[in-house]
Image (cartoon, rainbow, N blue to C red):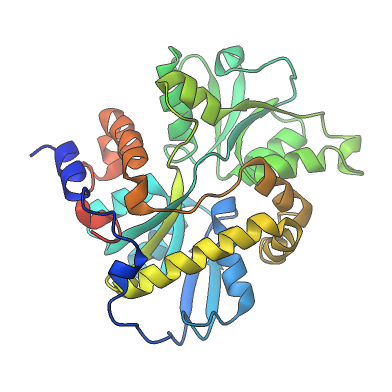
Length: 333
């Protein structure tokens, strides 16, 4: 059976709702450990931790930020968190390498934008020959950029001069300090850059910036699909990955926290800024309007996951650990 058939066939029965997964109600945990990057996917995690105690889930909720893919992988391998926000391809790679985990949901579908000092550039083709600051080499968003560019008839290695940096916030700093003209950023770094260049004293030296290209729209144009990319979500690790009742209760709590963040943007921004000092509350609130989160249970996101994974596997099998993940990858299988 091929990798694709195994993924499709084994996940065909994953339509059961949370009630089918709960079984006996598990006891409230004494502590729940959450982790995520300084990006939109972590906002609901930070909100849950800000509450301190989540009734029916945990007496204490703790949040630990991760800063780069290496730190994320080390955290996962050491089992230092119960639920972690991460790119979906990293989750598949860790799973295929034997890390006990399950993908709980996909909540990030469109947070990538090319931000530029040039207002007239509107498509990826308009940036041919230009230097672009790019975070996370061979990880999201670099992978999405390369796949989209190639599908549009561009050579991502030859048609652009990619300047790789450690994170979206580092790319943002290069942009606002005039060391690059263009940067591929993920929210909330996009909103942060736009905010910084319109405020004193940064505006005295920073350039005028524009949200030039919506990468999700370019993806839709390249592949003739909806402008949705199954980029990132939440993974259950270790013992949590084996507890279906806990996963179901956490998934509901995360969905509720997501809804709260979307309806209470200013308050959510304040919570995030209190944890992530490099982000401002106003920029986080802006980002929630520009790229809303949509927490979709992993089983319901199967088709979008498969489409993305097949694109990545065709060119970079190692990014997924050499194969597509089997049914055990998705919570509820």
